[in-house]
Image (tube, rainbow, N blue to C red; front, side, top):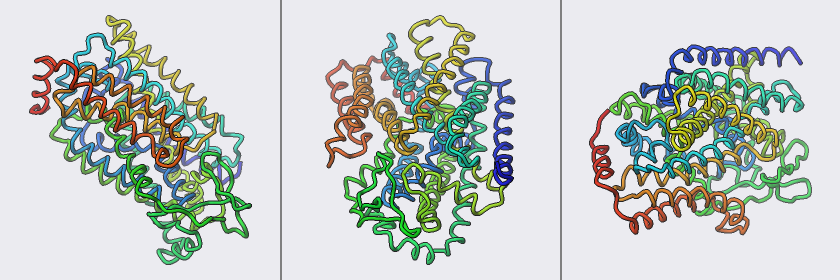
Length: 530
């Protein structure tokens, strides 16, 4: 290993040590009860709530997946996806956060998302809770795998050898599991606060230095002008191989390069359907447990407006920077990265080119921050789904806190192992894996969350039918229907979300109306202030 790589690793190692230390510190405060471990006693201030929600939400996708898409196919897909997520962030904080904070406490002090759904509808047989818990286990294990892929790509790049990929996936996963296991929700939220600042600082530094190194607006435009439709938000660039055949991100084939210049076809129009498909990413926010839990954990509902401002500003700066970094990366290193998967390392290449080794290590730690802040949430929420929702909620309702905590730890280990196995398969880009898990959670929980909070007539039968429809349709659409192409190629979250809403509405109307107790709780939640 070169001295450059050693110094870079030292910068990253210092950051990792700090995160483990925080986990150990909060271990003393977070292991007294499941409520402490899973929700931090609803004690998050506005900055911690906002920054931990956004950091855990964005994941390694923000510093690798999104810039990678912009680098490989230009501004179109990346811009509309980022815009949809920005709008979704604002709407979620604006209409869901305060109502969920109050309703989750009125609903018998619910501490997880499946717990809230079950208690909201007085589901004494815990059917809704069980379905929700299983979906969380499945989709969050996939999500965790995407983050562990980030560790492998990151450390493999730092060490300069892909042979380190598997070892670094396992090491990164183990480190996250340790501090999450020790400190629970409080450790996760406090580290996410720090990681949120690190992520946005890293993005801004690379953006500013990249802008200068590439010659500003004039230099970037000059370098990109020969790539058809690359900067057109209503178009998409078309990478081709040496024979002129289109390069597929899904298949991972290689873009051709001649005399250092990447090869592109004429590109294509980004149709209205393409734009709607990308912006549909924003719908996923209504069903993201890692974000919704922060709403439930805010200390006072009166602080949510302050959190909203912090979260929305952070989201705008972060996503704008990520898209621009991908475009600047193509202008600065046009023929370096020739597949969709390798394009996701453009942030690292720019950081190493622009900064001394120790500083580069800290900047690259922004990727670690993004991945760790998400994977810790995924592991904690998946563990709570099995230990609190399935074990205590369904199979052994008299389980004591000691047993719940031990099942949580064992589940976290199993989720970590499953996520590592996904990461080691290395068969898709981070962007594509995240998009699938995002769709699954967004369609299963998003429509139900909105109906639960804002339509009194929603029934348990409607809730169960809607959740099954949303999660099932994502899988069906992705694996079968999307293969038909054309309009059926739309992002699976959109049709699944719409169909879930329709099913909840129709089934609720034909079901017996909710009990008087449920309706009274609904009214109480509208007026409550905690």
